[in-house]
Amino acid sequence: MQRKQPIQRLNHYSKWKYIVLITTLVILLLSAIPTWYGEDAAVQITNKDGHIPSVVSLQNTLTEQGINVKRIEQKGDKTIVILKDEAQQVAAKDVLGSVIDESQKGTTLALSLAPAAPAWLQNMGFEPIKLGLDLRGGVQFLLDVDVNQVYQAQRNELADSLKQELREERIRSVRLQKVDSDTLVVHLPSEEASYAARQFIHKNYPTWQITNDDGFDLKLTLKEDEKIAVRNLTVQQNLQTMRSRIEELGITEALVQRQGENRIRIELPGVQDPAAAKNVIGATASLAFYAVKEQGTGSTMVIPDQNGQPVRVGRKPVLTGDHIVDARASLGEMGMAEVNIVLDSSGGKIMSEFSRHNVGKPMATSYNEYSRDSAGNTEQSNQIISVATIQSQLGSRFRITGSGSLQESQELALLLRAGSLTAPVTIVEERTIGPTLGAENIQNGFAALGLGLGLTLLFMAVWYRRLGWVANIALIGNMVMLFGLLALIPGAVLTLPGIAGLVLTVGMAVDTNVLIFERIKDKQKEGRTLAQAIDRGFSSAFGTIFDANFTTMITAVVLYTIGNGPIQGFALTLGLGLLTSMFTGIFASRAIINLVWGRDSRHDVRV
Image 1 (cartoon, rainbow, N blue to C red):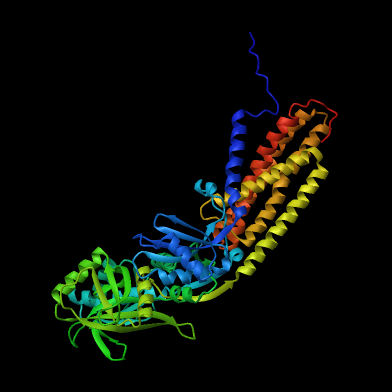
Image 2 (image 1 turned 135 degrees about the vertical axis):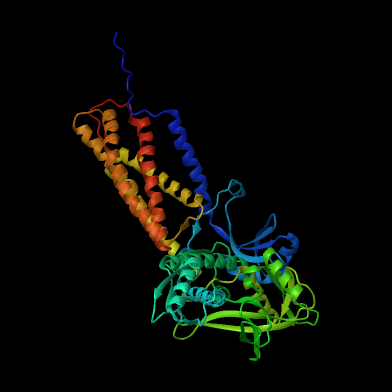
């Protein structure tokens, strides 16, 4: 008995497919709605100890100064003051700064933006699309990281270690010459000494390449792969330090990312006065603590104090700023500014051990920073800001004086809290985009998007008639999904080139439907019914649509991977637009057409 073949139903979707389609559209629609409401200017107050004035007190203080407050929200240790007028944001921060003590640990005031969408949408976790610098306005810095200083530090450390270690290996009459930032020449008296030194260095310092120089001398150069590793680590550490510094400045939604081999790009949306940010971001100040030495007592060096007088200290610091976890400026008992320092556990142990063996002896605190001269060369300035006698054993908490006025002490404390840069940086480019220009970019960009979308909708409705209206519904759904995805994906930022990507997506989304509709027409010309033409049209067009979108997606991925800033913004919207246009053009359009014309068996109907 021959088994009957199951009857194949044309243009039929299972219920679960409609459920997936509707659920996806609803979720992304809810995600896109907050963007329609936009954002309000706000000032965010953070205090981990919970000591913040009451909402009523803050409201009254701001109202008395003519600041129009929309509402004040409290979420855990954060209080967000939302303003009616964006132009009053900086003034509101200054007023709040007069009643809130930012010198307290864990207390910060930050300029921010708060979603203007209804609370029920925010409670569901939906937020507006984050706008880039070119749309919101703000400041952009491009920093150059001088990794040569790190190579030089490694070379100096090698020289200090080798001199002592070769002496312990009974290799005498060794003289060291520092050549380039990553090169050290070891002058040796004989072939035997050269051979012994080569073996020792090869075994203990494998990251340095050894070559023969004049006579019995050896030239040590940092290996290329080690230089690359050091450079990557240095830039990465500087990135982390920059992020910490920006958090200390109280600037939210900042973008800090690497650009090229040794450059860092920083975008500060909403910041219109770059002076304070520039002073802190470009600063490379750090502290180090030295034992004060007498001449002839081991390896020493001389550092001038604030009056230009020489102070002889040990060549290696007892402790560096890397171990500082907190620093707060205050006024001491004598009315002098001081910085209260808290060390991490390992730093506390080092300081405790050193001070225990040096009670009654002086310890110097040095202030170190880098700058660039007119020729672009890096200059290092190092001075002793205080020399104090150790009265008793110190621990992980102590204070230093001599850092200048209270304001200068506060700036030093901020830098120490945020961490010292691994290598000096220089601001090589600075751009300021005003909020008016940002608003104009938004207006022009979305005007272009609206015009392109309107003309496309009109063309599809006129040229493809009934199926054209399906394409228009799918196109509107595509834009909703795209905005929803941009708001939903963490780290996604809409930029002006991103709006160009949205305009391009309109064309790509319609192109998908054009290919399908033309195939349906071709199948009808072959004499098939409308239902058969719809089924064959979608099936035959899928391969072409997939190939075209896949190759474009490769381009989008490459642009996002190797590009930066505006290029990444364009690539992001392009890539997401490809995904949403495939989804709506094939899946959503097919679902609508299946329900309306999927069972139409007429031959004479035309679309």
